[in-house]
Structures are given as C-alpha cells and as structure tokens.
Image 1: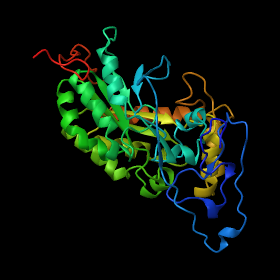
Image 2: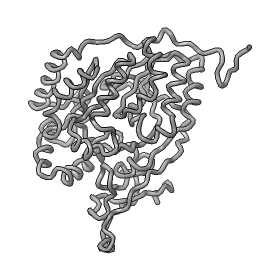
Image 3: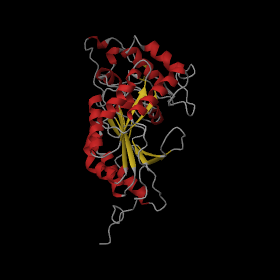
Length: 371
C-alpha cells in the first residue's frame, strides 16, 4: 500500500522479469511513484517455471472526485489555454506518453499503473454545464483530451466524452479534441452540426504507418489504418482535421515523417503538426527499458540521437525547445516538416473557432424552462 492508502498493482523500480510482464501492455516495469517514501523491486523467485505465462493485467477504474472540470494554463509552448480531460491515465499504453508522470501525484506508478488504473469522471458533464452557466464565464476554445485520450477504450462504455460534447453543443461552445482512436466517428451526429457552425476541430495522432511498430509502441491504440479512417470520416462530415505526426523518435519512426503527412493529406487532413520525443521525469527510464526490450539493436543509436537534440541530456525542458529540440538533427527534422507541409498545402491556416455564438440555453438541468 502507498502512504495514501492506494494499492500499487505491480510495484518495482526496475524492468519486470520477462515471466512477470503482462501481455498487451506498453511499459515493461511499474516503478514506484517518485513521491512515495518506500520503493519496491520485483523479483522472480522461480515459481513461475511451472506456469511461465504472466497473468493478464486487468484495467481498474477509480472514480475521480474532481470538483472542477476545466484546466487552464499559460504555457508559451501550448497553443490553447483551456482543456478538459475526461480521464486520468490511458489504456492505450503508449510508451512515450508525456502524461505518464502525472500518475505519480496520485500515488500510482507512471509505468503499468498509468495504463491499467484509470481515473474516470462521471460528473464531468454536470461540472461543465455548471461552469458554463456561471455568469462570469467567458467562452474560450477548449481542448478535450490534452493530457490523455478522450476516446480510449473505456469511453465506448462510459460515453463521458460524448456527454461533454453534448453540453458544449447546447451552449454553442467552441472545442477541439485530439485522439488516436476511430471511436470519434461514433459522435459525428454531434460533431458535424458543430463543425457547420465553426465550433469544432479535430486532431488525429498518426505516429507511424508500420503496424508492428505501432503494436509494440502503442499496444492498445487503434491501428494506423483506423486512424486514417478517422481522418477520412471526420473530413467527410465537415470536421477540419489536423494530423499530428507525434512524437517523432530519431532512428525509429522519423523516416516516416513525409509519408505520414502525405497519407494523412490524401485521407483529408487540412493541417499538420509534429513534436520531437519528450522524456521528462519517469518517461526517460520507461522508454529506455522499452527500447532495450523491444528494439535492443537500435536502442543505443536512438538514445544517442535524442541526446544530441537535448544538449547531451535525455531531456531539456527549456521553453521553446522541449517540443522541438536543438542542434543539427532537430533543425533537419524541423526543415523536413516545413518543406513537406508547404508542398502538401498543410500549412494554410484555417478559420478559427467561433466564440460569438456562445449562449446559455433557456432550459438546462439546473434551470428549467419557464414554459
């Protein structure tokens, strides 16, 4: 148990021995969170010899008791100031996910816990409606899923993101979302009318077109083809789509940059972005563990190039550099991206999201109609 009383499912600061690694997950360890006073280490005592197959790691849902739903930031590296995260943690299990370290704040590991202990917010739609009804609230575009994917597998059952979109639609509030899932196509009945009013945009992350690499690196996310299908379906419904070639990882998926952009353009993307791999806090150790297990022949070369972009370190959090890096390799990647989006027409700014249509409905859950 942690100091806060929360259970740690498979604690340990080092990679789990192969017989103990659960299948279908991204991280290969479950290091104790950095704020915990006691550290644990896994140990294979040999009793797995008779039953060598590791057990499936079940996903556990924890109710999030947040009293507010909109997060605000003033970071110069982020293009938006308001965001909503329907979930904490993400079952997609992407090994590089920049949100992993946040799980440590709640007494859980950024490793396997992050992708198997998911905080859910059943009160999110009601909290959003309460916020928008506040007379002092002024509409500013809000991003859904800035931290973890709003369309991760559990959304299919809980429909929290769908209910949030319903609230935003009723208030004519501008919004955008970023996802790796084709589940967003389920909500076209809400998204298409919002898009017709200039109230919604989408971003779909396409990290690689290599199915094997995607399976290893993002084990429970949609296949590359499904993500292209999402771009195609959103575009057909009139929803503007940006493709995010992110993160770009040196000597792993960087060679695909132009191909990703070209394929996404053909599917209907109208904008593009990229981010160089970021390895803050625990992610650097998790990523290196994964590299050693999944791509041992390339591991040293990958980390060498990453350090060349980060002033010799695994990561540099300097404003303006953390998402792009520095040095010759980072400059070359930026130049390749710039040339590709110019050639493909993915650098033309589209119309901004409208805030002038925002209005508080006469009839809401907290304020019934007079008639």
